[in-house]
Length: 247
Length: 321
Image 1: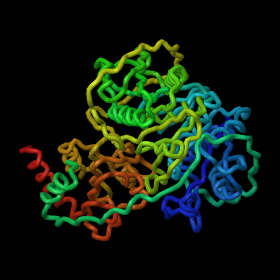
Image 2: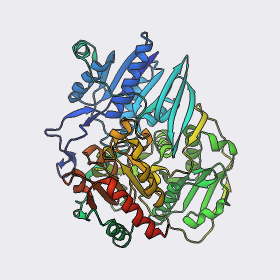
Image 3: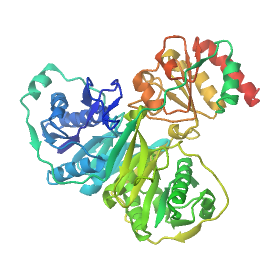
Image 4: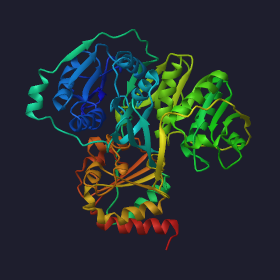
C-alpha cells in the first residue's frame, strides 16, 4: 500500500485577512502558516491511521511551493509521514498545482492519493478532482469515511442534503472532509523524528496556469447591529418582515 | 458558440441550485450574445422543454435512466463531449457536492480555466474577469480566465431565479455513456429536511443551548420558518447534533437570506462559514459576544426566555395557532 497525501499551506484560521501591493497580494506579514486543516486533520490523519493498521504501508507527502513551506511539511512529517517531496514552484492556480503533482506522482505507483476537500484560503475545491482527471483515476469528493479491504475502498461521501456510500477499486483519489478522522497533535517523539526524515526538493515541470489572479477586496463593512430588547421579539419579527424583508 | 449549463436533478425535480445556474447562464449568454443551452442527464418528471422558461433556448437531453445513478466521472465525459460538439464558450455548473467534482474534472479534462464559487456575472470589459469568495468568505478575489472555454461554478443562493415564458427545443443527445469506476452502493437522505446549503433561512444553535435535549425550540422555530437547522463546531464535536449540521470554516459554508444564531459567541472560524448570509440575527446572553459585531439584528438575553416568545411572535405572523 502506497499512500500520497497532498498538503497545502494556508494562513492560520484566526489570521487577519488584509492585502498589499495594490490589493494584488495577501499581506503575509506576521501571519502564522499552517497545514490546510482539511489536508491535515482529515487526509493526513486518515492516512496515518491506515499505516498504523498496516505497517508495511508507505506514506508520502507532497507540497507545491517555495522553501517557506518546509516548516509545515516538517509538522506533517512529525504527525506521521515517511518522506516528503516539495515541488519547488509557487502555486499559480489549481490546475497548475494539480498538473505539477500529477507529473510527479504518475509513475509513483500510489494506491491512494488523499487531499483535503478544499483549502481555507482560495477555497478552490478543485485540485483533487483535477489531479484525478489528469491521472485518469476515479475521484471521490467530500469523503467523510474511508475503509479499505484488499484492493477495494468503501467510502461515504456528502451528497446534496444527504450522503452516499460508494465502492471503488484502487488506485483512487479522495477529497477528505470532517468525519474522516480526528485532529491529532504531534508528540515529542514525532517532532524529533521528523528532523531526520527525508524532505526532497523536486524541480517543477513546465505548466501553464489557466487562470490569473487580478485583485483582492474585502467585503463592505456591516453597517452596525440594531439591538432589540429581549422582551420584545415581536419587534424583531416585524423588522425581519418589513425592513429586512427576509421572512 | 453557446453557454452550456449543467442541470442537476433529484427525484424527478430540477434542483433549486440548478435553476439558479440556468438563470446565471442565461444572463451570461445575453451578456456575450450567445445562446444558452442546458445539459440534462437522466429524466425529470416535468416536460423538459418547460425549462425554457428559465432562459435556455435549447436542451441537450441524454434521457438514459442509468444516468440517475451514475457518478461525476460519467457526467464529465458526457458534458465535455456535448460542450465540444456545440462549441461551448462557457460552462456553468452549480457549486454543490456533485457540481464541484464535475466542474474541476471538466476543467482539467478540457484544459478550460475554472473559477469555483462565483457569486456575480463576469466583467467582460477586460477579458473575462469574475469574482469569487476567498478566505472562507472573509474576502473576494477577481480572477481572469485565460482559456477560450471558461468554466464557472455558481455558489447556491447567490443568483435569483426568474421564471418567464418560453420553451426550450429539446434535442435528444446520443452520446455514448461509459459508466464510471465508482459504484454507488446506497444513498441516505434526511427526508423532508432542507439541504443546508440551499436553505433560504437557517436557525443555528451553539454551546449556549447547554445540551442536545434543548434543541426542541430551535427545530420548532426552523419548522415555522421553513428553515434548515445548523450548529457551531463545539456542538457537533460534543455529539449534540450531527456533523453535517456544523457550519463554519471547517464545516459547511452557507449563504442564506437569513441566519439566526442562538447561543453562538461568533468565533472567527464560525463567522467564516456564515458571513455571506444576507441578514444575521444574533441572540446571546453575553452582550460582549463578538458575533454582535457581524450581526444586523441582536438581542441580549437568555435563549431559553427569548425562544418561546420569538416562536410565539412568528406563529402570530404566520397565522399559526
